[in-house]
Image (cartoon, rainbow over all chains, first blue to last red):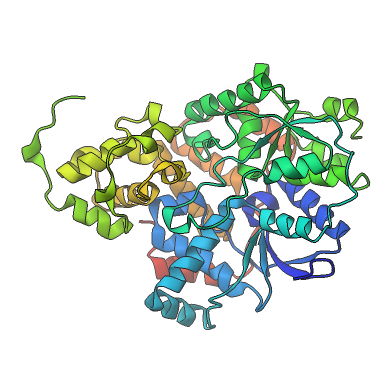
Length: 283
Length: 184
């Protein structure tokens, strides 16, 4: 598909609609620059999140399925959050595997199921953009910025889905093409603790601080995250001595476009990145 | 670990877990890759591979009462590490559902109430409303102060919205809960 001028449907998910509005805004600003048009899925609902999946599988499938049935036909669905992407992909797989479930949901939603609906995680879109040469000529803006790329548990998935691409290295390559330097460090795919950050903060705090210390020890000036949940956990459970600015991947991409960085995004960060941005000429 | 008394076993436990999880736990050869990779292993009563062994031994009560099944967040790191593609996260999902359905003692009631607060928020709005979830959870735990400063800071930074982001078609969300049997 040709991306410039293309239309995608868009599933933002609860985090991007609320706590991580800066992730949503910077992602949209980045896509607008390339004339990739996205329209939010009308009246989408929560993908079910870890909590539903943890204790009620049937409800988890129903919540994810409603979004799949709301999606417009013949339009790839862009999903920004790795968690939502996993939930919706699992639901698509489950419905394709069971004729019985498919029929039950078709009669519940009174619509045929789109068996081949294309679910597109933002990373996949970025790979396509790179392949089409859209990211050329943007080099230099992040020059010298030392970045710890943090994937969290995004590349991990159930064995049934282990043939899917995991995009390890994409953040490093993209940052390098924009002039940033990725450090080598050990915690790039260590889970942030997700919901334990609320229900067992001590556990999450230990994990988060180990991750932050790892980034600091590797010489990084900032961490870049692929997931809004990781971003929030790193910011809220980090102890004062381990504070390092944390950017959403989409924020750094937008900053590299020079004209699109917005101060409003960074005001919402709990760890203020402004001093670093000034130092590196990013404001 | 204490000696395991074999005569307390529930014979078909492994079969039940396999039926619910669709995972083949007999492929596990106890190489400990899952346990070595698990970020939560140090806080778990039993390591993930030990849970598989205990299921094979039929130690249902011990497994369902353990904190291991609640500390697992389903990050799938174990699945990436496992050389035999055992779907450990699906096994943990199945064990949690069994613990709830069979009214086992819940080792981490706080984690369960958090999940319930999230699901209730989805039931009301179709989406998660973080402020409401945090408040309800803190009330249910009678712990209003531990994260008070953090909450205020998040409000000041507008990380927490006072009003929820909502689905308009509330009826359809109600229908989903009806269809799926609400909270298990």
